[in-house]
Length: 418
Image (tube, rainbow, N blue to C red; front, side, top):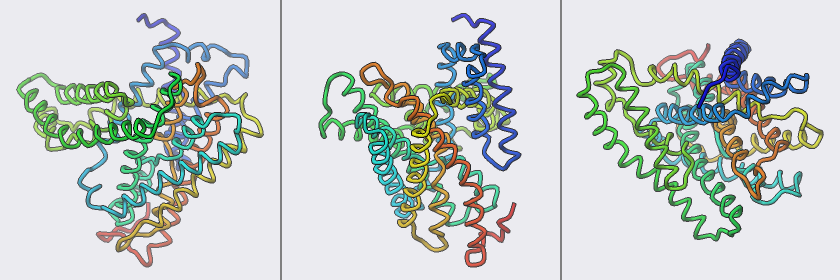
């Protein structure tokens, strides 16, 4: 594929806008992803000012390919930051929070979209409900880390539930995509086939957890004989892409495999190669994700058509936001354990962040009768919901944690302040 000058200029523009808007967002106390998303919205709607060049650029296949690669690496990175051992230790409390935090938002999102967009098929309502299922691990973890509460009992429940939430959400996404694809092929999917897809997704993740660790250790032990520098990053990326391929081979989205790859790679697996390269895997991966992940978020924001905004779209966005918040507050009722603050758990589960955007973005690529399942108005409403839930979480969570300091002091004598 030939990279024309306009593609190179477009990538330069995306990176500049992403970093400038990300910097602005962080200076305002918000996650950089919010700035990158808003930058994409601005670039994608330059045609309203009569400049249609960027609109032509977004239609280039190379941009879609880079964005898809970015989201695969993003889920790989999220998996690397997740700890299976810590997930197991928080046990039933986190699992209960996660299960309710998926079921209730999906049901509420389905109901709201059905009431406000009655002309859409039930497949569309279900997909919008699925967008509400996820929780952003990264955004909540960043807030907890900044407040010095990352090791508190409340934080362990929140992060454990958020990771389990994402796993369940990926299973839900696989099932919903399977239902839509079956309907697009003129088939109705019975309960057994839905169960088959769900079991396939769960089985793939469970198989990755059980077999992925030993497989990765064998791979890294083999490549350790190579003396060339950079072999750790190359081996890790090869493992990630192979897992993404395997997940697509069994009918799941590639991001499921990428997440599983990150989840099973252990620090001890990479230790020898990391020592030789003088940098850990996450450090080496950062320059690549710093390039590709913003491309995904800007491209995702560019899909929002401001011309499609209307009173109905804003009403849908407002209602989706309300049920998105309420659904996560209800899941906090399942939280328990010494030192666990239920209000903070509920608030920490609110942000949909990058995971919600991934789900919404998948909805624009899945078609039913030749038409994208998630239409431009519904997509715009979903993105607004993601932005609002991302925006309100840091101040609300900080307030809630500071509120509980008197009765639940931070562990290890930490002050809990910035």
